[in-house]
Length: 123
Image 1: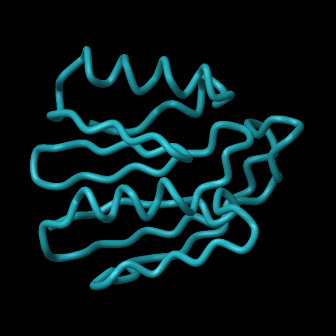
Image 2 (image 1 turned 90 degrees about the vertical axis):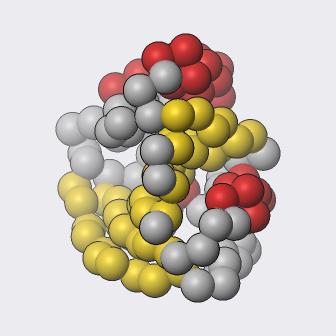
């Protein structure tokens, strides 16, 4: 089982994201006005999803193509014991609990403009 979430506002304008087999679990609208940056919207749409199958790489690439490169937006998901963190054009895959893999993804996020307090995916 693959499961994760994406913030609707993180998709670039004109992006179409429709990987085969993806199922919607929940959509939540969040007021993040106290933690969003000036360049980010104050309301976010959190889309939680899941998928059967094992095309982790294909799913990661679909996110990498659909995400807006500005502001360090990212999506993350788990596939078994693997954590996948995807930025526009960049994919990180590591075993959950691998601190070096996590640190590499966080460092990239900071360099891409993701605020440090938003680099908080769960292991």
